[in-house]
Image 1 (cartoon, rainbow, N blue to C red):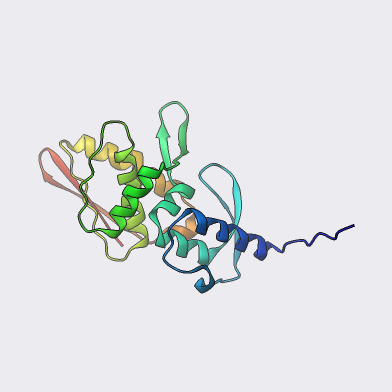
Image 2: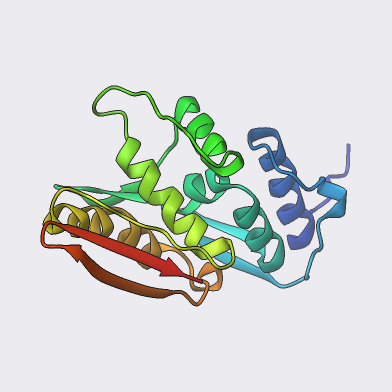
Amino acid sequence: MTEQKTMTKLEYAQSLVKASYKQYDLDVPYDKLKWSGELIDVKLNDGTIQVVDRLVEFTLCSLSASYFIDRYGVTLDPKKGPVPLRLFDFQKKALDDFQHHKRVIFRKCRQVGASIITGAYSIWRANFQKSQIIRIISLTQADSLEFKEKTIDLIYEEMPGFLKAKTTLTTMLVNSTSLKTAFMV
């Protein structure tokens, strides 16, 4: 008869983080992560509860927009309300390009989730990167506000409190037909 070793909560959290390294291109090697020892249960976007180290989870979310969005991003379904935002490989590639390149030309067809991932990337960048100004410019003020409410505001409202940076949201009219929204962290 073999004896099974029971994992501690910390060992379990560490095993989950190791598994994440296989899925995401994270810039910090696993053995260089700083663990706070403060283990908390967080609700992911699919409703599951997962034990995380508060500092490690914040670090991983700040390193990778894809990691953050896959775990905490939501989008609005008109009939169901907020639903988990699950990224396809091409969306992860686009997010990686947004994150690592100053200028990105995004050639796409309709209905591929470009607006949703752009909004999710905007809230990730405003929340996890210092001194960011994010501008949303659309043909009409109503379009800009709808985009902000359905993507940026929704994700921010749904994400766990320990991940929320203190952001300042300012909006101003640029002209009579467009709205510029800026986040400053």
